[in-house]
Image (cartoon, rainbow, N blue to C red; front, side, top):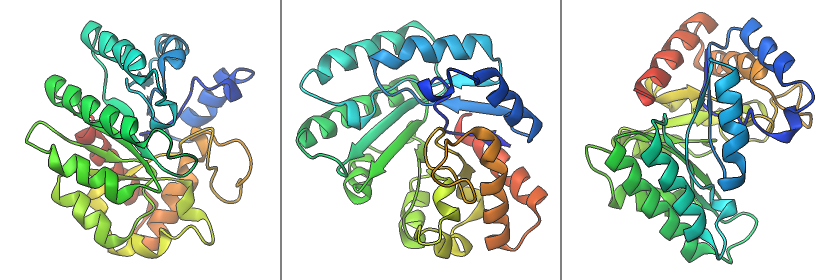
Length: 251
């Protein structure tokens, strides 16, 4: 399995990061992609990447960290993108769940970072909490043959997934698919399996039966099993298809 979204550098893993990653490998996770959140997380993320060859860094400014000084933060992101190769520009997008104070700045930061992804021809990892339509419209307006990516933590409808597919984008399905009232499980049977990639968003959004606890990549198999059950296909088939999808996503 390929873990397409895990914050392995998060402080929640400081006491047992080695053991946490060993558990993931034992459960069949072969590669793990780490989305950046802001300038403060870069050093710790790159340390994890250097220490663990299965981990891969991406570079971006998370919408929840877009404040008045967002241009200064973006300068740091741009500087790193110009210095070395990253797997994607991310985690970027819009978040209107907690606060809309910096909505205009969030939209500007998203547009700027999309252009960088096109410049370097790498995918984008999109965060769109309570903002799917607004995020989608911006991505669609800037879309061309050099833009690809994934709508991370997708909790939308089959119709929205189809709109995403028209752009050639993937949907990241995580622990929410196992929640009783998560809202996405009912749409999984109608979402194209060739569009789905697996993610945990660790240390957040642990799947059932670990909901409320710290999430970790070893739980990816619980998510895969739930999707396989909803699709009514063997787990091995689901893993093979989603792994191929993730390989296409990150080229």
